[in-house]
Image 1 (cartoon, rainbow, N blue to C red):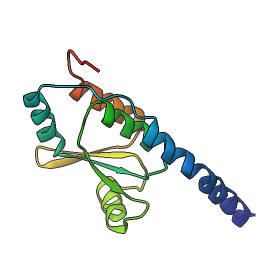
Image 2 (image 1 turned 90 degrees about the vertical axis):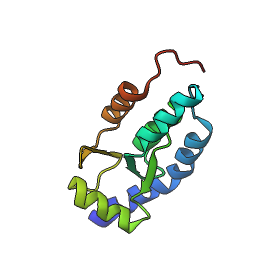
Image 3 (image 1 turned 60 degrees about the vertical axis):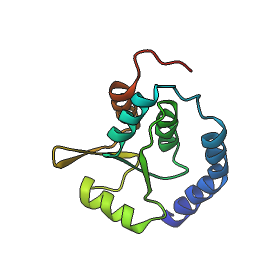
Length: 133
């Protein structure tokens, strides 16, 4: 019975993967605009952030859309196809669950796992006061 369930979900993922990829590519919101100086500061701040994700995970797509909307150049690590990224996520965060935002601050790393928590963190930290779309 386990094998039937496993193959059922693999089939569902196989069918939905192209839909998720298309949604990610064509459903992106318009990015905010900042002054060149403000964007440079955001770029510098994003160097301490890494998003561990799967390309077709709907929760990861939600976080990547928010990153695109806020014009955040956060490094992406695909833990589905990159064993080194998968092992880094497991070693650092304690589990292989995506999306996970690694936040390096004060010599340590915080691992944030929930998509809504990640979006709220990014909005609080990077939402411009006067965003123009």
